[in-house]
Structures are given as structure tokens and as C-alpha cells.
Image 1: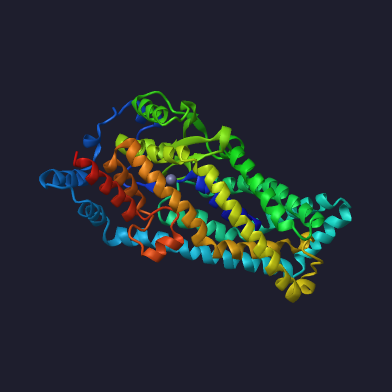
Image 2: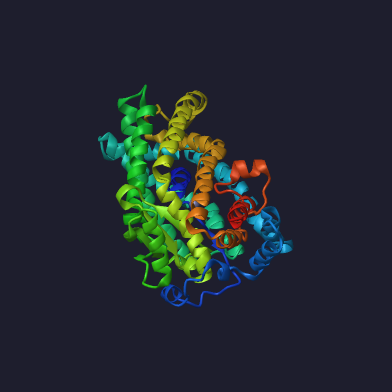
Length: 455
Ligand SMILES: [Zn+2]
């Protein structure tokens, strides 16, 4: 369960900062190494970097008096039809359901640990080993995390391995996937161990105001985690290097300098060992903040697309989305701990004695606490998705103005459509989308183009 909480909170939190730009191009095989990709293709001017379909849109624009942004957007929509469109929609819609299945599965695991007395027995076991309260909590967590990782393995395997291969998005073998799951488990034990030990220390000392102190401590801890992630966590999974020399690097670094970003903050990663998705992101905070593009982006997209995507990421950096999201998510965490405070009383009154949980500060009740928090996060889905999506709109606009590559941006966004639903309904986008829909993002690029072509 804590894995779920950590996943939701950290995915929300870190993922927010990542501002991920992901896409997949299964028809292309990566034939170039990143270095080749950087050194070989010259920086193409915007007009020559567009693909045939976009060239058609450009030609339409030239022949017509005014470029029609809606028609140009529709041209993109028409490029993904039939089976490919159904597959893209299915991947995304399956993800909506996974939010629910993950919640229900996690609740079932919590019920199992509590109702069978497993959680209380772990508590009794650690109490016999040490009288130190913090150590009791820590040892409880070090038993709880691997146990829940094992119990949730079926759904983790389905979501992280089977489904990704089903949709041809993963490059990981089963052994490699299990290896990475093992590393994640180790990271999870350290992070959860510290976080939960700290939370229970606050619960014991401040029984009335723990939720407020807990939220503040939680915000501080998550900021530390985000700062540490690029230095200590990400390198456990991938290699990050400064961009190799070449015209693409020159171009990206020039764009970085012109937007006030220190040039040593642009890196690339070997993400192709895990995924086929094209991706770039911003991660870290304060001194560790950096922009990273992955080797799939270097290998599988045009220079215009790379420029457009990197300008979007630079938008996250320049617009300080990291720190703004930290504030927003601290407020969401406040709400979550208040939700636990009130729902705990109800749940403890109904089930407390049956579960052998003495009070809210008893670690044996942690599965219940985690279950309540996961219900809150599930209900708050549209809130945190909207916080993230709003920043993505800002980064899109920033990127269009900085790179001046509307066609490159639209092409890059179109590539996301192979696993992101292009045209969701309004409510669907509001509830589930942490980036604007493909339609809206491509339209924003075409609108930019229409308004800038008139000069
Ligand atoms: Zn973004």
C-alpha cells in the first residue's frame, strides 16, 4: 500500500516536475547512436524539418489567404484512424481503469493484512525486539514494504511489464524488469522507512495537530527527495551524460542560454533500454534542477521536433513549475492528512478492535492509514491532474514562442497519440489528463502558426 501511496504522491510530485513529454514511434528502428544522431543531421530550418503530412498543411497555408488552424489540426487527426486510433484510445482508457483497479487491489491487500492480524503480528514481533519507538516503526516498515510489494506483484507485473509489451512500448526483458523492480523496492524501503518513522514520531508527540505538522514535514521531505532524485535515484536506473558535441547540442544550448538556463543543466539519458517512448523532462529542484532529453528523442525525431520539445521543457524551468507544484501539492497533502484524521475515527470505531490496532499512533494501523490516504488521492485525481495540466499548457505556450517550431511541436505531440487518446471528451480530459489532449496541443501549435504567419 505504501508503494501505492509513494507511487501516486511521487509520480504526481516528481512526475509534475518531470513534465513528461513522451511518445512512441514503433515503425522506426533506432539505427543511430545518440552521438551519431547529434553529430550527423544538420540543424534543419523549420520549413525543411516538417514531414510530408505537415508539408501538405503548409502548402494549404501558402495557397490560402489565411492559414486555417482548425483545418490543419484536423489534418493531424485524420492521420490516425481505424485500428491505430482504437489502439491508442484503448491504452489510455485502460489507464483510467487501472486507477480504480489499483485502488481496489490496494484496499484488498490492506484488508488482508489487517483482518488476518498480520499487521498486528508484525507490530508485536518488532516490539519484542526493541523498546525504542522509532526503531519499532522503522522495523515494521522494513517488513511491510517487501510484503506489500510481493502481494501487489501481480498488478505491478500486469501494469508495468505485460501491458507495456502488449502495446509495444517496453524494451525491457522480464529479467531486466524484475531487476529494476528490485532496485525500486530497495529505494522504496529507504524512503518509506524514513517517511513513516517520521510521521509516527509526529503522531505520538502531537496527537491533536499531527496532520498540520505532518503535512509540513512531508512537504519538506518531498522537496528533499526531488532534489536528491537526479543525483541519487535516477542514476540507479539510467546513465545521464551532458549532451555530446554537435549541431543539435549547439542549438539546444543556445536556446537554453537565451532563456537564462545554465548550459550545464542539459543532459541526455539512455532511456531506450527501458522504453520506446520519446521523452524529455525537467527534474530536480534548486541546485539539482536539470533538463534531460532521452536517446529515443535524439534518435527518432527531427531537429525541429527536438527543438520544440526542449523549448517546452525549458518552459517548465523558466516558469518555476517545480516550486509552484511543491506549493500546490503541499496543500493537497494537507487535505489528505485532514481526510485521514476524520475518516480514521470512523474506521477505527468500526474495525479498530477487530484489527488489533490500539490507536492512530500504533504502526499496526499503518495499512488502514495508507488505505484511507489512497482513497483520498483517488478522489483528488481531477485536482492534481488539473494542477499539472495547467502548467503543461503554460509550458506549451512558452515552448512555441521560444522555439518557433509549431510544425515540429505538432509532429512531436502527434507521436504521443500512439498511446494517448487524441480527442477525449471535455470531462474525460479534466478528470484523467495530466497533459492537454493531443487535439488541444496540436491546435495550440497551429493557432500559433496562423497568428504568426500573418506578419
Ligand atoms: Zn511538460
